[in-house]
Image (cartoon, rainbow, N blue to C red; front, side):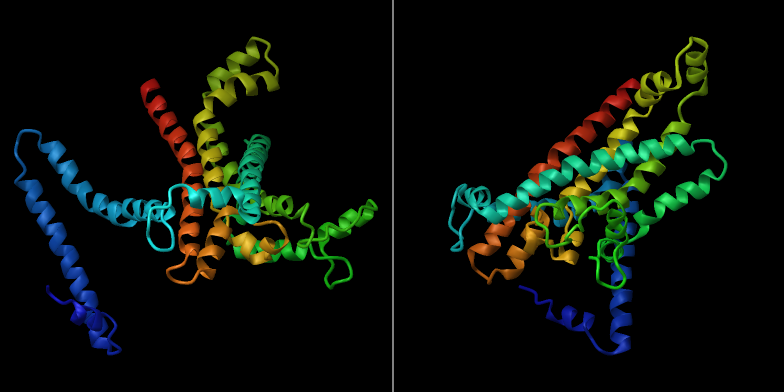
Length: 335
């Protein structure tokens, strides 16, 4: 077998010329692959040449997808069905996931996230996009609501940590101050196990509402004005025109927004970690997967249980992706 230790040594060389040489070598390999592809495309058989060309240009992406996506999924799936010794364990790891109190709580919380956050963010985004459509300063209004989307989850956690901060601390959290005006008790964030998940979902809605607004606003502008004018002539109210014309016309965009936010909520990890919510009953599948893997010793059952949690997330994501693909196919048929 040919040893590649020299390549690893070269890549990690502390000398500047070693690093530059490695970069040049990688670039040369990349250019060689591109050149080979162009040569093969030029010599592709005349019969079905377009298909061959498409296949050859997609080949690098297919290889990377195989290495970075398909093989890890298969490896994770196999790990989820084995025990610490590497022997076949059947569904014992999945039984643990649904039988363990912490894992069951994480699954329950994740379902709350995926039900509440996408629907609420989409409704808020749709309402905001409808209200600002065509008004003066629309661009500024869109930019204002889109700003939270550009903030990292950790940054959002810091902002909302101050917003939720308990009375008596300096500065007092704005949310608790407003609640105090109405003689309502403090939130007790993040130690209140009953409310912590919902308060974290509020942060996610705040982040994703801007994305929903921008996408749906563009979709609303694409609705033919002739249809809306015809509805007004026929005596339809603004609500009837919105419900019977605008909503059906922007349905593909609504599906995209819902699916995108749903997948994001299934993978939510940063907010839970930043607030330490797992200590107070606010854990999610993604965060539990991380902590289980992090705490597991090499060669122990913890690694396989974290793989099981990863597969549960994957199983939950697949229906959303399948639904999105089905909608794309249906839209193409309509066109």
